[in-house]
Amino acid sequence: MRSIRGLVPSLPAFGWLCLFFLLPGALVAVFSLGESTFFGTSPVDLSAPSLHRYGEATSDTFRIVFENTLRLSIVGTLLCVLLAVPMAYLIATRLRGFWKYAAIAAVVIPYWMPFLLRTYSWRILLGDHGPLTGLLGVDSLGVLDTLAGAQLGVVYNYLPLAVLPIAVALDRLDPALRTAGRDLGASPWRVFWQVTLPAVRPGIISAALLVFIPLMGDYVTPSILGGVKAAVAGSLVSSSFLESQDWALGAATAVLLIALVLLILGCAALLLRLAGSLLRVVRPLDLTARFAPRGWGHDLWGPGLRIFGVALTTFLWLPILTIVVYSFNGGRTLPVWSGFSTRWYAAIPDNDALMSSIGISLNVAVLSTLVAVIVGTLAGAALARAARPLRRTLLGLLLIVFITPEIVSAIGLLLLYVAAGPGLSNGVLRLVIAHSVIAVAIVAFVVQARLSSLDPRLSDAAADLGAPPIQVFRRVTVPLAVPAVLAAAVLASTASLDDVVASSMLGNVGTTTLPVFVYSTVRNGLRGDAAAASVGVMLLIAIAVVAIGWVLRLRGQSKSFAEGLVGQ
Image (tube, rainbow, N blue to C red; front, side, top):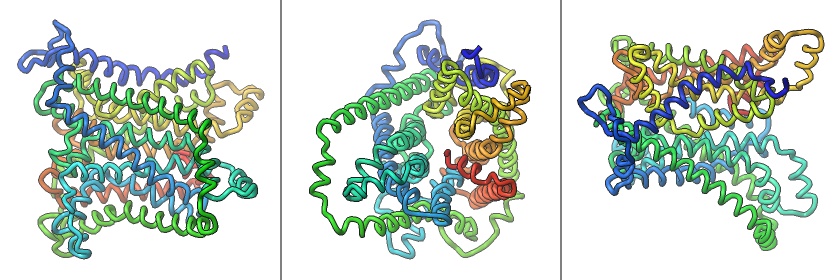
């Protein structure tokens, strides 16, 4: 019986992810072996399977696409981690009380803002008529519409994902370990390198994965800030399916993309192991610590961290504040300031397409979050309480979902929808399924973290008193997990409201979401009413989070809710 403990709560997650993740992934692999048929009944001819399209995808014509993808992803990941470590160290070790929570909020809240808005805001900031040009006399320095512009955008967009796991890992480190190192005569520099950094290595690895995986599939940021000079694999996949209708080439590119992700992750794991073995033998930090300057390091370390924290917070918030201010621009074009006005907010109800996209986005977000909360909560309970073989199998499936770039999952679902025919032709249903796949993994991990921190004797005591398993789950497990479930629901709904990749590929006529509507206007200059509507959705999310936090505070559960929001 112990070998199947937790089987029942894990079944919905296994069924949902096998049907809407593994099966679509298999279809991508199969379609990559065929030839595109532009006028046939099927988009791909599979009568003579071959590897021909893989050769085309890796030819010199598309080699620059994969080079750009690797450069943006690897350099972006390294920069995010390097910037995140001192910020996380400041939050976890130097700030207390209000200032600590304020710093966490300053990092987290920008990530909740609409993805397209915070990306496009750099075009306003660095444009010819932007505030940096007008007030400071700083021009774009040729950054926009180059690979450097795309690099700036990806670092900005994914930096919060790197800060949070490192800050959580540092927060869990016992301060007594650092104090003991200082008491034994070690300098702050040596304590950091030989005590703090090794202890937070899992957080750094998590941060790198959280940044690297979505970066490999992101084509929206490079297209907005990098233009044609920053073509990436995701844009090749998207254009193959949506524009050129060469589905076989798109499928082959997607398979190569996921293979490239696995190759990079494998090489990174090998390098980490080799580096660890080398450091245990050479121990270069012992040598550098002996020659490290003494006396002034401690005096400059704290103020330097605070200055860095202020600079990083400014970097994160400047684009957000810019887009909020410019949503009140009275001019005909958003990037050119022409005076304060609420005309764009007043124009929202008159734009039927915009109002429809807002309704579709909210509808899809609510339904996909509901599915994710139900399936993900059960999966989180299984991860926390199931027997080891079952827990490892479910964890492996969720991790595969997590490390798969969204563009690959999206085209797999597109192939599944086409194969299913009219049964899966409803646009809202398509989007709900797509958004719920990754949301299930998000909810499962957040709920699992909460349940793993609880005393298992509570459930055992209820069972000893005669409560059946379903009643133990309903009367004990669920109430204790409510704060984490609500936090996971906020994260899932935010991801749905912000999704561009899956929504642009899987929606059909009449089911255009707000991010897709905004993305369609970005190419010709962001419309003022679209920006105003996105700011309104941003405020709606903020109000919802504050309201939930206030209710849970009255119940004494606000801390658990806050921990869930930052993945703790």
